[in-house]
Image (cartoon, rainbow, N blue to C red):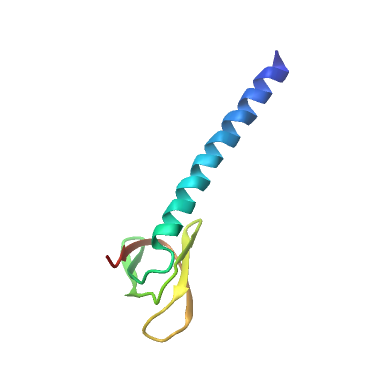
Amino acid sequence: MKTMMILATVGVAVGLSACTDSSRARREATFSDRPADITCWSYGTQTFQGRSTGKISDREGSISFVDASNGRYTVIDGECRLVYDK
C-alpha cells in the first residue's frame, strides 16, 4: 500500500512538471526572438525601464536580455512586466 502511494505521488509530480515544461516551451516559441518593452520593480519602486533587442530568458525571479540602448547583456532580479511587439 505504501509503495502504491509513493508511485502515485511520483506520477502526479512528473505529470505536473510536464505541463509546466509544455507551457514554457510554447511561450518561448511564441515570443523568444521578439523585442519587448521591460519595466521592473523592487519593493514597489521602479528599478528599470527599457527595451530588449530580442530574446528574454526568464528564470526563477530574474530576467536576462540584451539591452537595446547600450547593447549590453543585462540581468535583473525583481518583478518585471514584459510587453512584446505584435
